[in-house]
Image (cartoon, rainbow, N blue to C red; front, side, top):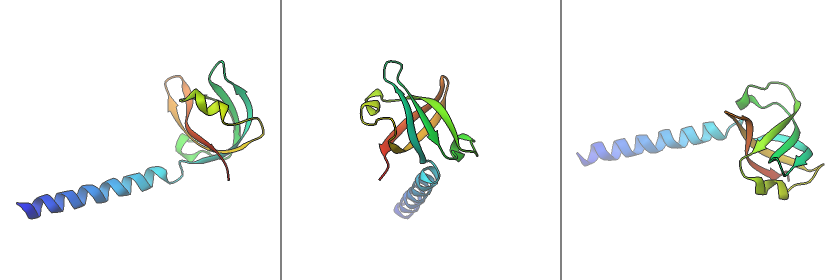
Length: 100
């Protein structure tokens, strides 16, 4: 019985690590801040392809932000790396940081 539990735990860990690596792969998008609208909780980003969103071409788009505090951490012209998802209200930035 203990052997079965150990095998199940190892399998769950392997699947979990594989899924995490898959989710992280290709999720980060490189871009540049073009406009910030703190009042509306939106940011305009010029960015490269966003494969996880089905966007194969570079473009400039307006995104809502999950956490409005991130808008205070960047300014127009900053290069950023961000993650976004499609939400009911449109595309939403879920994580963002200045590019290094």
